[in-house]
Image (cartoon, rainbow, N blue to C red; front, side, top):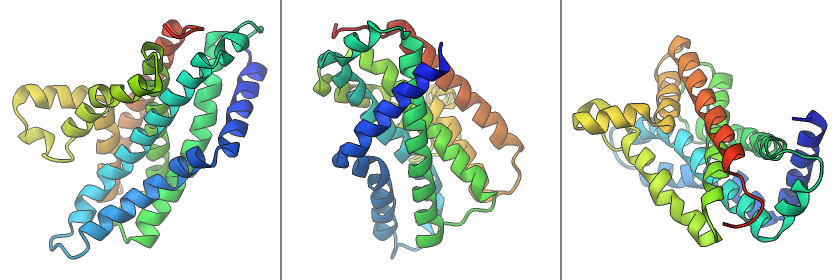
Length: 245
């Protein structure tokens, strides 16, 4: 791995995203718009529903958006022949993936700060823990979505197939993360599966910060999220092919 090559890949990705206004809007504006829409839906509903499910959505939306954008963007590199040309240069697969992870990680940081700012200061979401750690969890969660998107893109032939991975990879995690029903109230098998899924750790970390200023469990959950991201980046490096399968 060469840091200079990784930075060059990251710079190239950021330049491409900056020129693609639709992708930039999807990355930075869409999560804020979705959170605002949800707040609007529950604005007149008694029981502070937004305060209950809003933190979980701050974990889900960055993960969802980064997974989708990364998987499609990487597939475009392969189908367009760009990836094959890049890998003929003195650059390893891990350089390519880390460059992508770094670029989308920076975008995820901006996205998370914007979404947290809109939720807390614009929509009145209650957060008892440190706000900066709240944003750190959201960034790590988005990086996890990036790593999983890089990994699954290796198994898609078209952009449509890349999108089709969402019901298989993302939706089960949303259903079992505790958003709809607390995980300890799920059937035992589903509870165990939900406890092991990576998105559940991000939801738990943000939920802890929204209810308490204690950070011990949050750091443990952050370590698990980071480990999952490293695993999926490593798997992505092993399965990354130059051409569409």
